[in-house]
View (cartoon, rainbow, N blue to C red):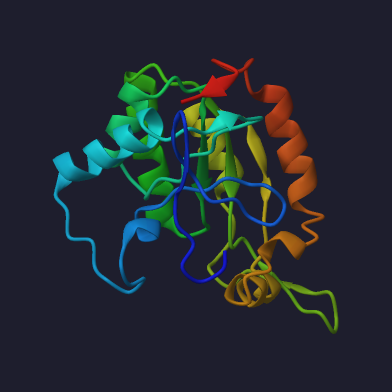
Length: 202
């Protein structure tokens, strides 16, 4: 987004800014006077903001609405599972044992909330040397398939550490990322995702 990106307005309410390819995004950071200001909120305020982003923003017609949540079983996760008509969640892990434990906790929470789990992805799974093509498991061996089996959810794939992602993000050009490894995972998720809860989000 360009510097100073802010909400727009329509007769139906505030509209989120759009990226170059038309992806609509909403974040607390877009409401701040300065992007490096700290947002020091307790759980109820975070929960209230999530509900407002869902209920007060005019999203229009969407193919998918993706809500990015922090790791674990925080108030934010609970609010999303209780307040939004979700088709399901995608668990994201990394090779470290601690990450696996946090993912299992999140899976347990989703099961208690009767929220469908669409699958598990392992991020930062390895680094592939561009010169030799050899893979290095910088954070240890993968346990993602074992974790997925343990919680009874499909394993969707492993994604590598790719410096190109950080480079394009910093330049504001992330939509130029080719993402050959992402495509089959996205296609798999699209097939696993139940039919949309509603066609228009307001």
